[in-house]
Image (cartoon, rainbow, N blue to C red; front, side, top):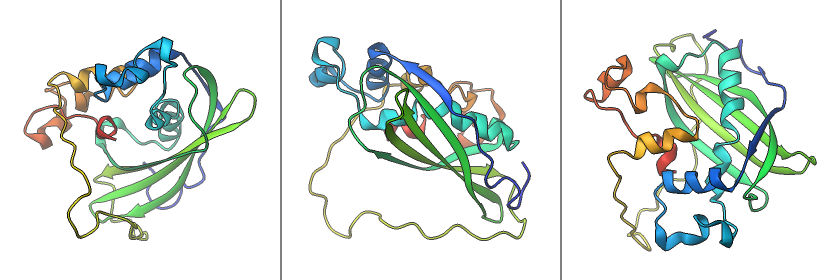
Length: 208
């Protein structure tokens, strides 16, 4: 990766992404939806689409702008994620997404690359935006600015409600069918897996 601010402003052409109700249903199953949430799993009920599905149509554009910026899968970890949806996501559509490198920050041992995307329907209606914080290991120390403090966080009090979910052992293998084929989530022999006790890890976005 070209450290410093060289890659800021790198962008993609609008990339198309077509999907149908089977894709949104598979996404719902991948993030752990159960038969109790049939509105998200059954075509005769729409189906409804989880707002976080926005990260799926944006993924190809993310990968394209990372490639243009010479950011390799072999050395990255997902740091943070943001989604802004303007209206409910339809269960089937063809969307067009543009990705842009918005910022690069120096974290001494690593760099944080912030990538934004904007997605429109084929008719030009703005549907949602995403923001991805990508941590590029061993790429810090280039004299850049540190990342700004992020607002938010849990309040200092007891939660209003608690929901507990069980992660299935094969859940990462199911979620990767959405398009994130990073070996970190499947291959115990992948070098970066050694940082996680030799066990492939679940996608952060699967819990999102």
